[in-house]
Image 1 (cartoon, rainbow, N blue to C red):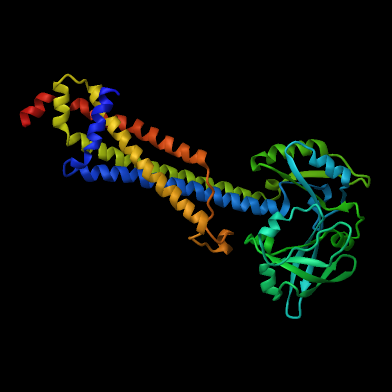
Image 2 (image 1 turned 90 degrees about the vertical axis):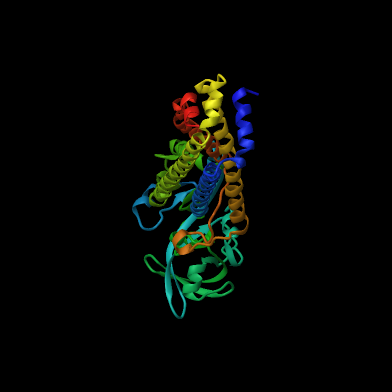
Length: 414
């Protein structure tokens, strides 16, 4: 144990016996660091949770990458393209791809005796991953998704159910318009709710066969294929891989394949999510500034109230840099205690919100009904290390006040 650390440890152990000003200054400095770190942990956890929740919902509706007909980009109705078993297997075997599923869409209208609503009917086959819809099911059950047999069942959103006054088990007429009007009577199998109004207000789910027949497509034709990746950060690489293989190739009918990532299909939504990072940076700067201010003020008060101690140490032969190290070691212990309490507060409050959802939000505005939390232990560790290092580096400047204290002048005034 070094000489400076030993003296700093004794000072830290007896800090409660300090003078009238240094005692509250030490407490304010310590709690300034604690509150700053707790707010940073909460802010990062909330932003990560919010972005993760929105991304998960968007991907749940449309996958991470879509392979569609090139002409679908320029028409209001989806154009058909061949997606057979061999192509599904080929896409699923590409690097980074974990799952592939077909889909087809058809615009139409649901009508009851009292009102009507325009919708987009989205058909899914038996390989459809129902995990997302099942997790947001609010009433009833999921339709039977199939590419071989029509079930005449649909899954509508909670907002549609309220507007049309429908419940699971009710029957409703749907009308679809092309060269002529096609009418279908569906059974409402269930009701889902994701609070993502851009999708909830329009998407109705059914089996693939129904949408193919409404579009007058063959059984090997659909609107496209949805591809999923394991890690969101790998979407761009997976998109480029699929694009190199699929783009500028055509099916047997001469329809050209086109590949797009979920960020390209919904650029406004993901640009908005990127803007949330700015809020995090501002909060981090403010909280680190709070920690620096309270610690600097506290250290200055501690140095000024211990001029006698500094004078005695210098008279006994201690150099300026040794005395500075004593106070910097003292500050490091104080910052360490602040970090400890900051972690307890930040992680504790985050866990309570994650476990019990204590703070609620308006889903119409925020797309979620409770404040979401996502833990990132690497980021929490980085916040701790960054706060400690930045605080100690900045405290080097006020510690130079030690060199201006001369034993002879102190003893003269005493």
